[in-house]
Length: 386
Ligand SMILES: *Cc1c(COP(=O)(O)O)cnc(C)c1O
Image (cartoon, rainbow, N blue to C red; front, top):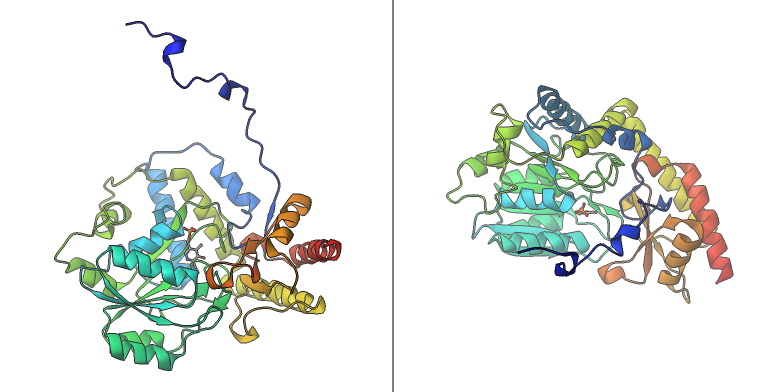
């Protein structure tokens, strides 16, 4: 049989005329991704090497050490999951849940709901403790929920990106130990921007992403699990229901065995190593202060414009601010004009807050007063014209 061009149902006549990649220059002030640090982009711009190359294995050790610093944890099992934050999120649940386990999830925003959905898929009996979007949980209500549900696992979101609240962690780790329960913490919008002390807080498993506080492109996501979680993993009766995220297999690659599991996204490892290296170079305290200062500058500026924030100042997240949309203003029309006329991305409200707030992210590389100035000037102009 001879094959002629007319045999192909899909030909390249139109595709041939596509130009090379052309990406607009955006200032990303939404819920993520944030702009990547140029040094991180430069680090990615190298040839890949083999994922079992001696030089690569060294990089892996460095990334693990840098992650332990960023999270303030000694956990041996600390590694980047190949995928975005949701993959690392799923890894914490997949490796801890055995069918029939009771899982309690704190739901006060969009990502609490995602945890509920994922935990159910692994066969957990899921119950929730709820709060309106924009509020935090008190230790007393968490204790009452633990008493009622007696879960094997409690999952909480430290930094709820849908609402802009930061959950206070005092006493929660001790509460979980008292009830012989593992504590999972979503630190996707806190790592690299908000104080985190995983070991001091007695957090058993945590996950994050690369594209928010670390200012790295999405695709390599920090994951950590401590000894209590490892013990549960080692004593499982059934296999982890997700092959790709099974830490008992992945630990042979990231640990001493160095045996192939899946091909590591090598260039993403270059990128996250650089992002974490920049964090270590700046130092956690300086990094956290920079975020707090940029956020307070934003909050003061918004107030001066007569706008108000959705969350009480005490629980406000520096990395993400929810701003109430003034009466009579179409939230979506403002975000469209900001991106079309000012190359600036903002987030809209999700779920219970849809249409009611804008979400302003000041994360990693972007957490600078000069970006706040640019944003406030653009917002003032757009609102005046509407
Ligand atoms: C962004 C985010 C996630 C999901 O991460 P992806 O990288 O989008 O998969 C999970 N939890 C929170 C709190 C987030 O903000």
